[in-house]
Length: 102
Image 1 (tube, rainbow, N blue to C red):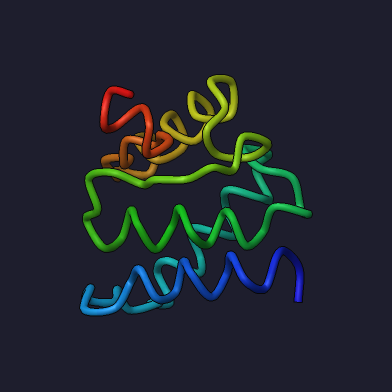
Image 2 (spheres, one colour):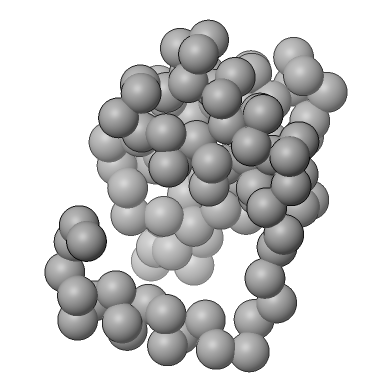
């Protein structure tokens, strides 16, 4: 398992009571497109899936502290263009601080 186990546990606890979005075949296919067509590198395939599930689930905001592959102005622009070119409205990808104005 990658990452800090204690922080992962705290993040999961924070999600208690929040509805889950189903992983659909459409989302999985779009995640593959994000990687195959260069919006995200292969090593960010899980990040691509995260985006694709949010897009297919109609999520308005995707909060992240992942500055390498998500909360990054250059990458965000590429993701937004790819979403729109496929007929999807992209979520607003931002950090919690950006959303809260802190």
